Length: 505
Image (cartoon, rainbow, N blue to C red; front, side, top):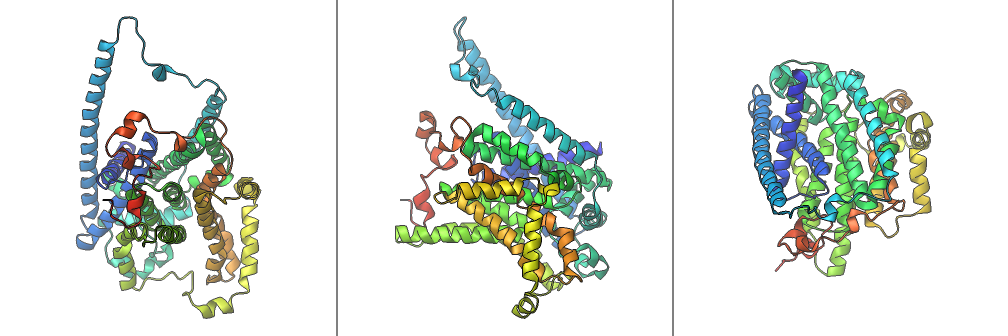
């Protein structure tokens, strides 16, 4: 029963995220599975944020409020789903009644994917690998970080009913990093509250949901740009990387962070390549902002993407001879949801004792670390027991096919490179003695955070295997003629002029 209730909480998060995306007009319509994965990510972030905000006013009842909102969202989704199911069944019945005796459905309804027989064994192999990893996740116990950094916070929030202000001032918890964000522990605490018991095995149900979302989003983003065949290959490459098997079963926040970076980075890259509705960019920006809410390292991807959007807006301003301020404002707006948490940290003077304060003096004094740290990063990227040939393949693809004319590939390369190249600079401020122990204990996890995004870059650097990707397929005539249809399609350019800050009249 606890596992059923845990799944119900995750379903409620998905319903809440879907409601928020629809209400904000931010749908991308990549596919139904991708919509569900994006809805789950948005719902998990929004629910944890609302629960934390409620803790500022009524810490003893915040989790109950969060569960109430999830229950309402799930009830709404089930009711709306039943309504749509009834309409669909009536439509199917009318089609069958109107079909002449002996008639058949349209050829497009019964067409098989001839010439792509090789995709079926690839799909079967990918599904088998995914089920094996999923089985490993569900059957594993959280590792040290999963239990004593994230899980212990979830137990504490479950016991207190929310996130009390005393949490930030209790230095006895400093060893568990009280400065870390709350998306994962609050989500786990909501699962605990629904189940009525703080069972660490339920943590892995939450991690499994993020793992499934990662597979779905990587598949759908690659399929959108390079077709079904390349999407299956990308999934197989991801599932054969040893680090994925290692980190997925430890209950750490690095896997959820990698999912948010993949989702947000993939959507922003798609928007930069084919600008559509500004609200679609806002969804990508929201996911990257929530990556910071998962773990502070998400700030690197968010900042790098922000620089790219700023450069794009500057170039658009030059071309249009008018200030393109809306994309920049739309990208920056979602990060405001983190202001209460940042204010809490500043109010209680919470600092990370693993790193020194940022200062030019410290950087100059410890600058001799940079060559050692750069060598450690290169050694990690080429460590076969962790990554196989994944990073070698990414580098080879970029050399053979430089992203010179693709905004999407250039953006992905910039975000991945900015994240990786910032690691030596970050470790320069480490207060560990020796600092190399700090590097050895965590650099693999920091590299993993952009691995799915790097695989998306790898897939986009290789020509499509077969068929025509969805990104370049023209919309059906009936869909194109529908009023407002251009705003909903991925990659639509109908609203591009409005994105530059001009009136759409």
